[in-house]
Image (cartoon, rainbow, N blue to C red):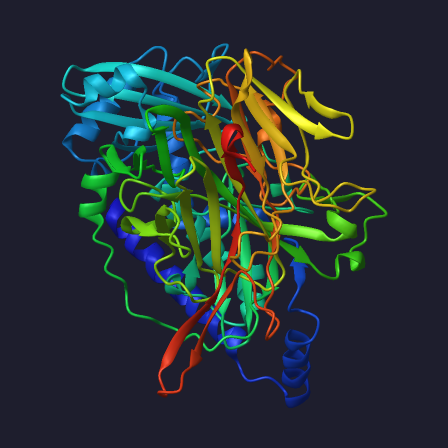
Length: 630
């Protein structure tokens, strides 16, 4: 019997089993049983954690997983340790870049542990975005075809990124990021979908055999407390099944390290009249890529000069900003949006004894006020050659500020199906004023996967006050310098007087305290209906590898005591050094009628048509020149 015949017979048998399973799940129920099941699904399951109860070996029987494991075994047996991307996913130059890297000693140097070969996957190989290049590489890549490549080591939880000059056949740089995970490849996205579709828990919860077109967010990395994917050394994603009629979504957390379902969770979506399907938007992808992702742009207006571009995953970035010829910023950007959801009813889980599932200890970890958290890390990026799911829409725009005093540079990022449930929309905005002050702004326009979300945009701001700088905090005793890298929560007012301090922080030249910038956190005073930042501020010494180029996902979506930049606060001295400020607001959304915030919905307008209504939440600090402050 030929191999093709065996495959055909296998497909037929699988199809018959699938039909039988579908009949079994959808067979007529006794009235009492059917009523009980409907009641169970409608009561108490809008917020519910589902831990796996089935043998994980079932996933190894799915064709996608079987093919993947077979490829891995063949790879190791042949003495190789990096699973390459298939040629169908690469253009000719990308294939050449892969060939170069698979022979490059430094790129492969972490793929062995002694004599043992370690499992590595090539995750993506794309034309190198300008945001990923240092100054020397930019000069080379202006004339040559350069590609960016990323691989992931599943054993050491390490991402390796390389820049390849394809024309010269040279590797320009290799950088390794330990305990850091990349966006996943198309191969792994397909495997995640297959695992979610074949999970008995998913089928049982949905009440039917799920279809591939029901899945959204399959390539968005996710984690879930009280599941094996709480372990951040595992590469996890969260395919989502949204049921807008029932106003809830089922999140299937897939562990791609162990190739299994790690956990699932029901979450409420909130009320919506968003249609089940909307027309696909025209994104002018090629124009955006060629004009904003592959090259720098320069904006000159009102004494300001701003270099800007779009990045693969750090949104809109501004660089080398000057005002009337004076340096103001090396760079500024929003590197991530952390999105987490509160898990109601977590107290019902039994945490008194240790729980093991298939030999793995499951931890039940509580977050704020004893509640459980679950969510995503959202990256914003270019519409092509990027695994970000919140994509650039229509390119950067320059607009006047509402009060007529200044202008903004802004970029809209959207999920293609926003404002449907489980789709997101963010705006990166930089505001510039005639007095030389500026503001870094993040805007969330909903809608997300629920009405109990906590959003945390991670802002990275690299001021250009001087080559040697000092960071100060305002206290009752006056201005106190920070000597070492540190962080704190930004207080809205002085504890005793309850009078808001307009400038609680400043950064100055080390030799001239009158040269520098005051930092004015947002407490709702900027007339944009904001409810304030409620932010944490981190101050670190500049290191190129800590975000100067396009970053991989930083921090945890759901551990609210870990914003991400704390990994860079190592106690190093910062007084008299080049300083970077990380500013992380914390926003709670609100779907209550008349109180909407960080929310979007479609409603019937006076003309009888559906209209999208948006209730944005706007956050971010303003930086004011010390010489101009009043």
